[in-house]
Length: 74
Image (cartoon, rainbow, N blue to C red):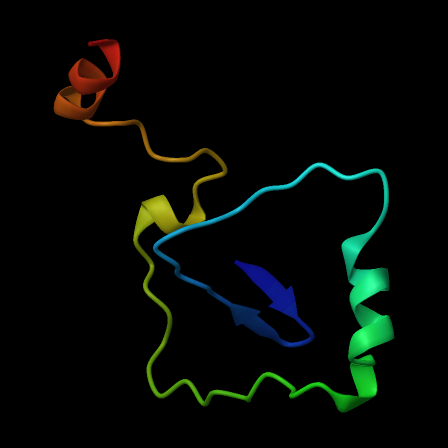
């Protein structure tokens, strides 16, 4: 989740890849496809107010359930 100007954007994915490099891969990618030639993210109209569930505003991530904790401990 990140703020893009006036919009809050959420991204969901089944997988993630984290890398640790000594350089900025984005700068290398700009040699192949400059920012000016990339598609922009579309603006999405929000027709209802955002959820006000307490966990959405919590600074800490949710605690794992007991079954998740037990599975990790094995």
